[in-house]
Amino acid sequence: MLSVLSRRLVSSRAFAFSPVVANQVARVRYYSAEAQDIHTRLKSDVKIFMRSKTQPDLNVVKGILSDITYASKATANAK
Image 1: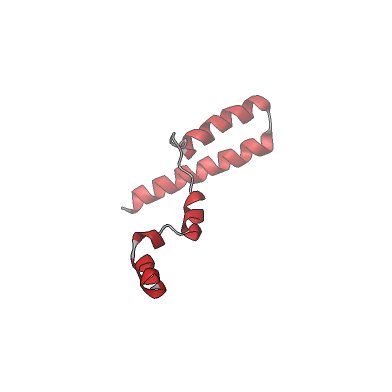
Image 2 (image 1 turned 90 degrees about the vertical axis):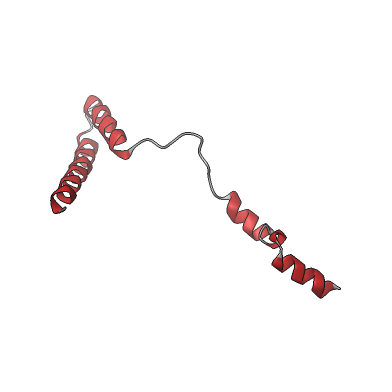
């Protein structure tokens, strides 16, 4: 009887929702709002760092924006 029950559990959907699987599913985050575009966020960070006069942070963000711009133009030229 136990082997029949265990076979039914393995073949049924009840096995898919075991505590191990439920624990992994619980780790997934679902957000109600979309994440801000990285390019938009970096542009706003440039303004913030210019106002706060933190040159090292500003240089990093400008470098990243430059790399993004260069990569987008390089892929457009490659086509």
